[in-house]
Length: 435
Image (spheres, rainbow, N blue to C red):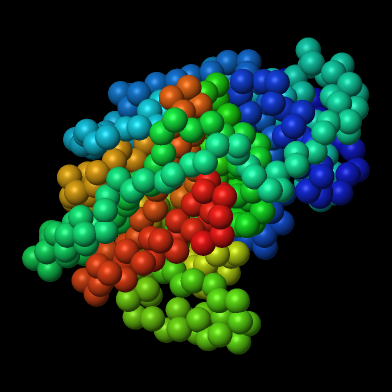
């Protein structure tokens, strides 16, 4: 059982920095921050999970069943991630590409302490045996040193390398287009990895730098031992609140422009771009089909279709699809029947996953997976791991990947340029230069 103790406290950057600075003595830390972005269906401004009472770590074999068992055993808050390669637990698939980051395929933990920022309140959700530590922790947070991330976020030059060169990328996209034109698939999300080896990073500075230039609604700082993720994700994979399930796939991208009038024109162009609209509509249809596998008949509906949301780096088309499920439906079952998310695979989903596994040069791992939480009632919220830096501190390996939807109307050169736009923020943070 947990007891909740509430204190009035405005949410500001200094408090975020102090909370994360205070948390770093623990090996397990997961911070989820909405950055006060006006995203629909947001339940909390920010959530911090600290320390570990129990955990589970597994490869893909029977992973979702193990997660179900872990949730039943704890009957508490659990935080963690699903890697993309859990697809191999759900279908007859494999992952044999290069895996530099080498993250476990699933990791969840039951935290010692949960702190929630909501409506200018700081909530401490502590188990009964730790409730006596609230006052001391509150003082420690107030006195923690804010992180000075300005200037260099690391002291060692990082040279980013591309796993897939431009010529190779264009050839692979051409191969994908061949599959599309002959009817094997009609859309596929094709990804490429940027990476560096021998890297020493300051995790907190790296995260705050990325967050400051992105301000994404599903921002994440994750620390599990030597495994770190710094995410500026704008995308929700799946959430549940009671009987209501929400998915918000992103498909359709346009770059931000410094001139306000030109930026408005860019929004209009995105709203009327046939290729970008078709990408989003195809994935919206795929998500509708995924939700219908467990929804109460007649409850699946599209709340928003191809709505433009603007972020610091890009404009995006986002659709919101919802449904109702029977109250007794297990939450893990909802994840199992929709994973991996359609926006990161393609359609038909199974055929697309087979083809992109053959064409991509790197194992996706946590990239295009999901990070999030489940609460004791089974409600949950998970992002899509995009616009994210992955860091294996033990291997000194840093990685970020970007991708885009390939459809019949795709131009390989334009798709490559879109990848560079999406990579801009992560590359700027790691290479310490404005791009």
